[in-house]
Length: 116
Image (cartoon, rainbow, N blue to C red; front, side, top):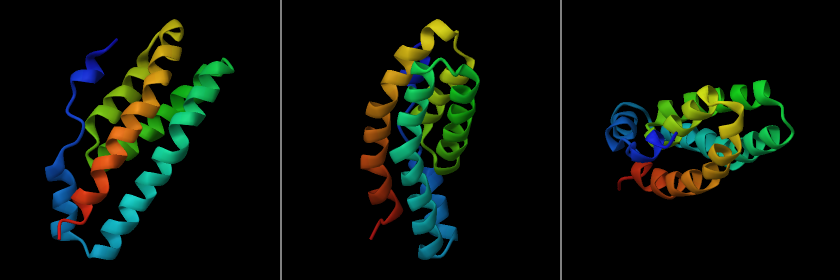
């Protein structure tokens, strides 16, 4: 259940690739879109788990996983994947871990996106 915790928080090379290949405005838009996910999706997943809407929680986790993989947020992607695959009894503990991992991720993304 905790294999996600050993996953590196971020793959800086992934975001660096975007910085190298894309105009700064596009990188900024990508980061803003990801930050919107970080600011909404973890709470939504927790609310859905608390309400017992397992299918919707798994769907929301899937979307968070996709956004995380796009930007290289490995630990968050692994946690979202664990939520998608977990037994219903394990979901509350996994959902409770989301805010902390999201905060840790959010703290490192903007500096990576703006290396100057």
